[in-house]
Length: 107
Image (cartoon, rainbow, N blue to C red; front, side):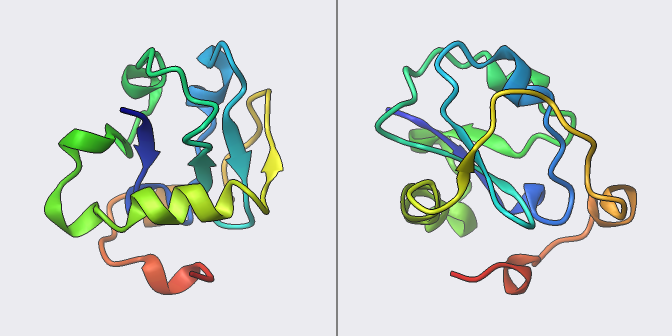
């Protein structure tokens, strides 16, 4: 099992989760974060830290978010590792409750 960042994070990129990760398995792209599945130790510390509930265990993903398992795996190979919290995207407040944001990322 690993944890997965889902579509909810797109255009928000809140980094509260990054601060608590003991193995630094978060990677940052221009529009959202992903978790490297081979580096995640399944501790779950990141889940309660995400203020918009964008992180799930891979076996508890909503059906419409299953493809984010592959998206996290693929993009964690090209995004840059992030180990400290940063400011969210300027428009995060506007986008945090918007659904269907996949078109904002290159997948």
